[in-house]
Image (cartoon, rainbow, N blue to C red; front, side, top):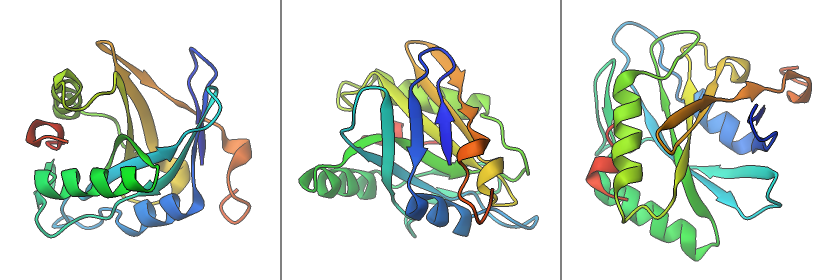
Amino acid sequence: MNYQDPQTSAVIELAPDVIALLSAHKQWGFLSRERGGLLFLRHEPQDRIYVSQATAPHKRDKSTRTSLVLDPKRCSDEIRSANERELWFVGYWHTHPERLPRISSHDLIAFENCLASPAVGISAMLAVIVGSSGAPEEFSAYLIGNKKVTELDKLREWLPKEKAGRSNCVDL
């Protein structure tokens, strides 16, 4: 799945393995809980962001049907491990209990708090939200930073053929 920033034309691409992981953890049924993890990239040309890895939900995460708090120790450990493999933290993914997910005010507060932390060391984050169908074409993606939120445009023509930190940084 690919997205494009409508303001800069930069392309954000999710690797097939990332799409598969996110889709596998969709939220279905009334009693299912939010799930989420971290997103990592390799350095690419400036007009392309390739999200090559996502982490799976963790048993120490705390969640309800409409909220998620990622375990801060697991996040720190996963970032450290990824950095050793030259992968860099770029944001978070999580599920919402709706078919066509939209970023919530709670999500925005959590991302802004995270970006305000000097420990994070980045000025913008990618947020990918997985809808209840789990279908990649129903994911939504946002760039959050500098006190603004940009919903990313889906580049549907690039769909795969088969489908045509700190504790205040993990409260989604």
